[in-house]
Length: 373
Image (tube, rainbow, N blue to C red; front, top):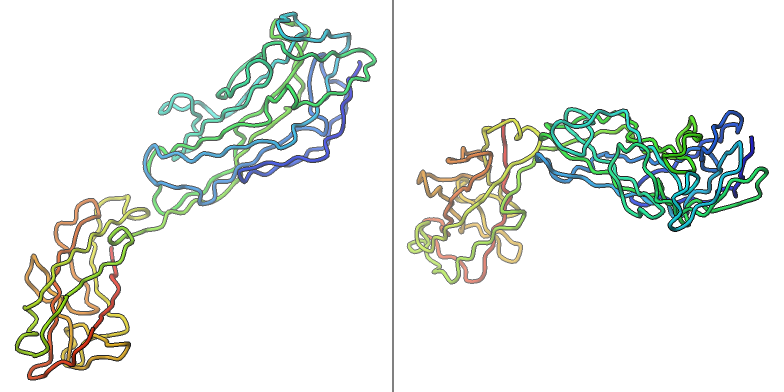
């Protein structure tokens, strides 16, 4: 048996958060005629999905791209001389042929995808070099690169050739995970081998060649955990501001009715437990630094330049029920559908009975709390 030996791979970089693992080469003894093996053994690309899920909805996709910065070198093993290929050369020794295999069954739900588990289908696309020059979807059997490879295997050979200059097959690709149904709370991702790439010199019509017993490239999914937290978004994450403009300063006019300003609190709850159906959602208004009003704990307090106004508060009422909304108390919000809805409220300034309020600006802050079960 003769071998065309190539240079030792020294550096390899993988982008997009993928890991690379080097495997010691096996002995050349027993490699079949025409088989191609990267110098240094199988190259393994590992993708991890730990909390990489961006959207917890059916058919949402999470995509990983990988690309080896320095393409691997390879060795071709031959028992007799093999002719070089070249552009337009369709001889049996021309080019390289690849077998892109996966032990994962094909998906019945998403064409072109593999059935990874209960929640995910996965599509693996591998770059094919040579005259093909594009990605193909796994699995593919006996994929020829078009015969543009001008390498020979001569017994004994002193040829040395960079695998990646023209033959880029297996050095880059795309992994797409598609969600088949929303995840509730979280799932464990088990390690899985997504694809193995086997290579040999020559076209598929060359019946004297065979693939090596070890792959040139592997793409695996690392074990991990994906958690989907319960989340309620209020007013799309933006603060709610209420401006009373200019108001009077006597209790007769600051009666909790005059100068009233309606405002809305839109709420949307998603993820985790909310994917199981409608939950019982309650909302509370928690006062900030202003606390509750000194003269009535059912009202929200106010500040002037950071100092509490003891005789001025804010009264909040529910527009639909017409009832008072007290600080720190949870309320059932009507008309919530699919764990989302809007709380319609009104706020108005109110002064302590018989008092006159000092002139100047006043502020009141608070936090909206969502509770569910």
